[in-house]
Length: 112
Length: 116
Image 1 (cartoon, helix red, strand yellow):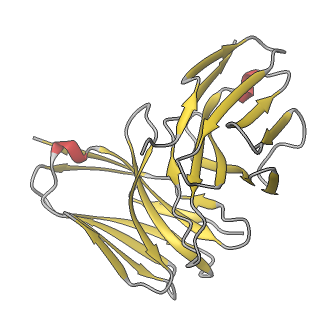
Image 2: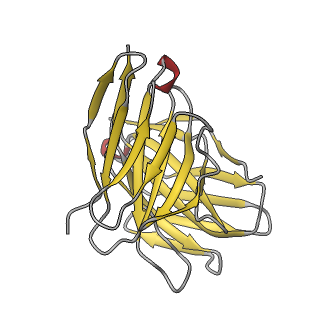
Image 3: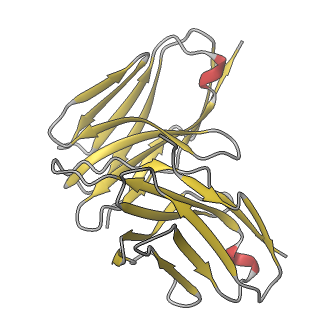
């Protein structure tokens, strides 16, 4: 059974700082890994999807890496801004039923 | 291209009533997924459907919950005889068919169900 864990659970940083969010998964037989952000009371916005054959994906100030052998993914946010404040979720896509197994989330606060 | 649409956004039901949650996938998407987010808990998979077929319902509670995705119209998640423990945010996601097997999922804004 796939289990996904995210560390840290919460993070507070000053504006402009570079930061790394961590995600680990127990079953390395994943199809892909997807990173989302969730704003309070809102839905999920897809940020990046890394296929199992890829090592990383980049979008603007975001860079996500994937190491299947060690069961880890990281989301790097460069030059953080207050608008980046949200909960960040990683989700592993395990084969068969196409379902996503979500991590517990990292609640990020970027302060002025 | 409109995103995934869910309605209603907020739903209040008394214990014992039925709740019907609707989801219209993105245009061109043939796969629909339902997830539930209980208060202070993470998102949990409930069911995966394609048109007129339930592919994986391993996350659905055995009783009172059902889902469908008819040939025409939105996907429906139906909860009969709701109890307070059903209070949660219910999210729908959709994905297109993918030869590469990526099945990137796009989420709707969710329906927040409150059972009084």
